[in-house]
Image (cartoon, rainbow, N blue to C red; front, side, top):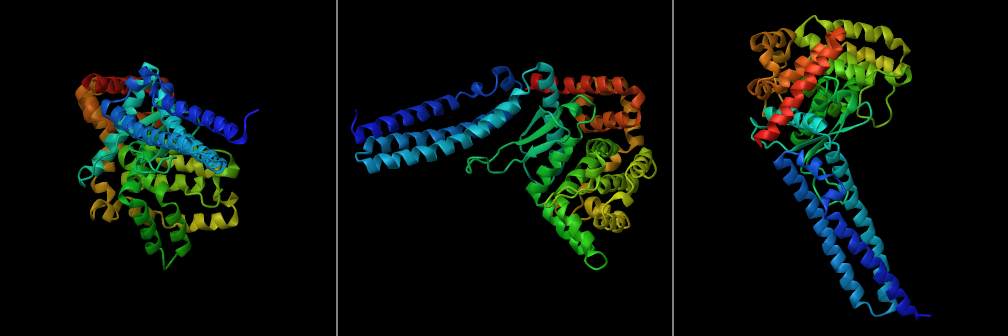
Length: 423
């Protein structure tokens, strides 16, 4: 039997060796996503993500070297017990870095299929272009976009500029989840909502909207101002998506948040989302205020018939009534109010929702003809309006749903594959 010091050293040596080997495995990114999936990233995105992840692994490797040095220097039982505690601490850091690698690996690996890879590259372009349209005139760089497909109803975003799980690394890319049902359904306008979250975070738009809501309603309806202030980040995303894709964004939002009656009027504590019953009405108000009468009127009519406000809890019902009477002012704050975030301009001075008005989309399709969906020029120059057009047709022509979805998939695939060739 070994003496106490030798026994402790043996176990510490074994554990340190294990974790040093584990770190080496982290440095091979094909342990997390296939080579073909990594190849389906644009070069600049691939370089940015790999550099970020490699930096995290290198810091971990340095920590493993320090751990080895501490082990070699340990002489007493107390020293070895300290090494044991350092191993526990190192293991925690390892798991944090592994979480980041797993997240990005899972996201990249959704591009293993050439078809899905092309569609996601097209989504990268659409989200990136939507941000660039605002950020470039303001003198800001557009962060890389990594879209990935996953299950569920709603999209989400890991924003660029946030600290990752290890507490030190900063996310270099905006990682946007696109749900499977939307990726192939001619309506991934939710990715524009998530891009809007990135914009609101980067420029401070969310906080400015919150202050504007409180200021606007401080005298006649402070409860309305406080409520909408608490929902400012979600409404910024909705406004951004509407400005870029018009009614397509409104209809897609409706279809995602329509659900069980008990959830239509629920407001969980701290939830930044308005109750669905009110959010749909507010989004329709954007279309009504900018476009006048249209299919959105039928949507809101059917919505209020299915979900009358008198079914809401008393507190929410009263807020609904008071908010509904102020929708024009709410829309004005979201889309027409000059903001410091946009250098004293409204968001619509940078992204004009009238360009995706139904008659403008019809004119675009008429003028470009069939080349609109096949020509590299039209695909590149009008990608966002093509998304708005496909989403509008999906919302208003359910009898042609299969045709619209196929047309959407075709031009999105061309867009995604075209950029890979160009790169």
